[in-house]
Length: 323
Ligand code: HEM
Image (cartoon, rainbow, N blue to C red; front, side, top):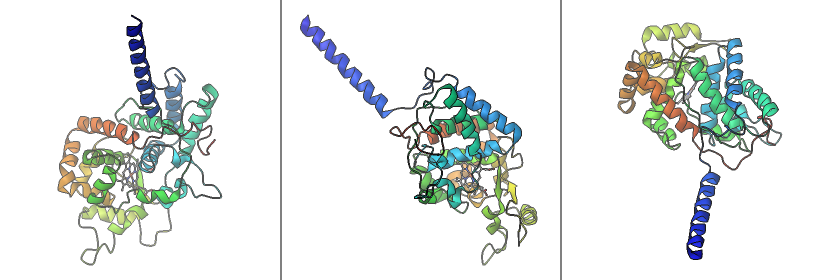
């Protein structure tokens, strides 16, 4: 009997160790804050809602913030850290200069620190805020997995890996695959360009002196190119000038894909998705079936949110600086 009990005990110990290791390895969970901070999601949803009521540009900015954070050194809120005397942070790199809405995360964090201090990581706040931004704009809703920790370093140099508007499909597929995101994820996530806008600098090389053969990028609808030329004149003094990324840029829908099919993608990297056989059928499917786009977008956002999750960092008290 004693032997049996001992066996049973060692089995239980083994199970306990296995569970602890799994937890230490730290899978993300949708109910991660259910006991420690049940109000977390509501507080973040409110912060996103109030900010959006004052500024319609908030949702696209939050979604882009999530992408740029997760794509570089994983979803560790490294994008939120301010530069120090020693180190220029990711947010001050050229690729991130038009990323905004950091204040929405700060507001949510301040409230969370009042209600449940040192509990909810900045990385989780970004992931929840991005989901809320999509949903508030008419897009899908999904359960956000949580339990990320915040990183302790942020280096502007790392943002060299962010895709550029001139990046071709082969490079896009490659850089997404390095983050365990496949071609379907790439095309589904690009649908985030259903919201928001781009500055002239991001697409004006398509409008004039495109190549030695073409003045205008031949993959762009010619009339559309002329409209964009008016928006972005040759000697443009207005550095804020630009164009919305699709025609319903405040509503999360599949119009973005429909426009790619008629040569009205703004960025070269967007238009390329329709002009490449590896991605074209996905563009066509999402243009045809909104439900499919929504389901795949939600799935790919969860995958993006799993990228390089940091389990050894900290829960920052202020999202702009390490503890
Ligand atoms: C596939 C590669 C991608 C490239 C090359 C790319 C590039 C860009 C560029 C150049 C802009 C305009 C920036 C400006 O001119 O200010 C932009 C805007 C935006 N991007 Fe992407 N992006 C990509 C993927 C994504 C993904 C995966 C997401 C989110 C899941 C995303 C979300 C957004 C949003 C929402 C905006 C609008 C921002 C605003 O209005 O403030 N992008 N992107």
